[in-house]
Each structure stands twice: as structure tokens, then as C-alpha cells.
Length: 119
Image (cartoon, rainbow, N blue to C red):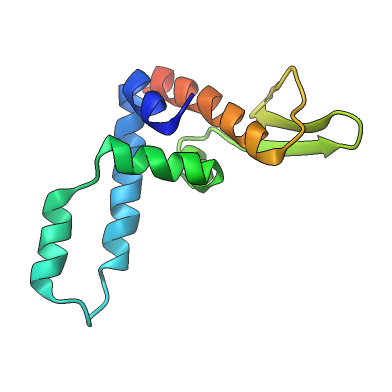
């Protein structure tokens, strides 16, 4: 499932994730060299599903801090025979993944659902 699909499927989790990305973006605007009108413009624009969805697709691991703050802890385990496995708190994936990125994408789908249900 792509990032935008996750955001549309799990609206409560999407709100948390979008807010986190917005806060990260606003933190970057604390540079005194940026004009105030530009900072104001960026704050007013916010962040939409397409932009956040692309960020999720590019780097799903970037969201681990978001889920940590909601006590949903993601881990990755690797073994030479079966590849990469994800863990979420006490839950473990039932299949291994040949590539870490595939494992990351799979676990992000799981945690979006968990966070959405938790909220």
C-alpha cells in the first residue's frame, strides 16, 4: 500500500503523522536567515496527503519516532536464511522479506492500522 493510500485508509493515524511532519518542517523554519513572510506562507500552506505520502514512500523508517511517541515500537530482525522480519511490540511478522525496504513498507502498513485503532 502506498503512502497516500495509508493516509486515506487510516484518517486518525494520518492526522498524527501529518502533524508530526508539519512540526518537523516548522522546526526547520527557525532559521533567522529566512524572511518572516516566507515562514508565514509555509505555515499557512500546511502539508497535504500527496506530499506526506511521497515522504512515506521514500523513507518509511522516518516515521519510527512518530510511532514510538505512541508506544508502538518497531524493530527489524535479520537472519541469513529468511531475510528481514519486523516486530511491533510483542508481535512478529509471519514472513521474512528479502530486502529491508520491503520489510519497512510492510511494517508501516501494520502500525498505521494499530495507531488508527488506538486513537
